[in-house]
Amino acid sequence: MADENATEPVNTTETTEQAVKPAAPKPSAMPKPHAPSPAAFAKKAPAAHVAAPSPAGFSEADIKQAETFGRVDDNGTVFVKEGESEREVGQFPDVSKEEALALYARRYLDLKAKLDTLEARLKSKNIKPREIDDSIKMLAEETEAPAVVGDITSLKAQFEALKTAGEAKKAEISEARKAAMAKAIEGRTAIVEKAEALAASLGENTNWRSTADKFRALFDEWQAHQRNNVRIDKKDADELWKRFSAARTTFNQGRRKWAQARDNERKEARTVKEEIIKEANELKDSTAWGETSHRFQELMDRWKQAGRAGRNEDDALWAQFREAADAFFNARQADRDQISADEKQNLAAKEELLVKAEALVPVADEKAAKHARQELAKIQEEWDQIGYVPRDDMRRIEGRLDAVDKQIKAVEDAAWKQSDPEADARKSSFEEQLNAQLAELDQKIAAESDPKKKAKLEAEKATKEQWLNAVK
Image (cartoon, rainbow, N blue to C red):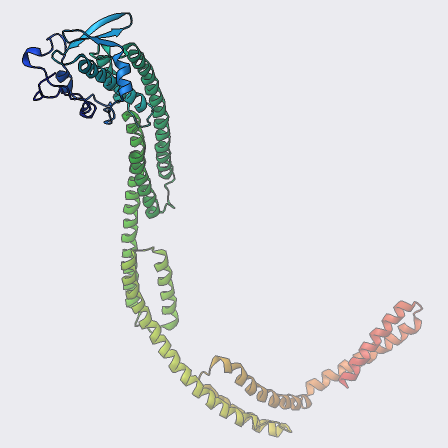
């Protein structure tokens, strides 16, 4: 029986050794140098990437099953059966054979637990190829000639199966990565093609502000794609970024040229509008209303054709031009208002004259017509001196004055016709001609036998008879 004060041999999983605490050997009873001691096993660092066995420990059945593959001689040397042969795995004297055998059986179960852990890990979606390689390499060393007691043949067979499964898993990961990379390249290429399409569409009608927003959104999409997708090969990433950057450069250069051209246009527009303002200030005090109104209309047309000088500057320039234009048009309107007031006074004066003129008619004879004509002449002279009346009333009052003139003139014409000897002579000669023509027509009608020709001659006779009655 071991000394109660001896320390416990350490295992890689302390919890698996808590069930049995074999006493540490005395210095004279330490394992032989050629065989690793349990303490040496315990001091080894945990294997990378392969999780430790469950801290719940192993069942007695598992331990007993593993112990069937080993034995301990009277010197405390532990052997394990491996196939048809047997080899020494360690020496642990001064403890019972049962304790020594159980310790190496647990070492076997520890090692098997690592294989089982890797087997489960290979089914995970987030395992990495390097993790598989490191785990296989570590387990290869541990399973080559393990200092354990258990079914080593089965253990090595399991390890070989894990190597095969590991290679298959790496191939699966490689294919998945290729597919993910192809998809990532496709997604990033789509972003590049959108940028290139925007760059190719630039022209005179481009909305540069809107297009800048679109490029900014594509850049944000690019960054989000980098964060949320598999990392692609540097060569492909550099090539795609070069294309994307070239499209952005094309846009930036185009926008700079547009901005420069816009600034030049605004500068030119500002110069033109300042010249227009200068001309407007020179015209604003003119009283040549018609000509200056036309000049201001021409200035307005030039202003519209000048283009924009920038919103703030345009507002300031327009205020200056509007001030000059308002000064002129307000003065013109004031003049029109004054003219309108004068014309209304003139209208009232002419309507008073109309009352006097219309009182002159009707006239009964030549003497009355002569007197009316004299009075109308005085009225017309005063009428002309009064001046203009509102345009809407001009035709009305002029028509009333003309009507008076016509009534007087009608009596004057009638009197003149009665006293004109030349008119009487012309009348007598015309009557003689008509009578001669009617006599000739009577002869032709009497001699004509054709009904149509006869009807035509009778119609001509009737017309000339009407003429004769009119001159009598």
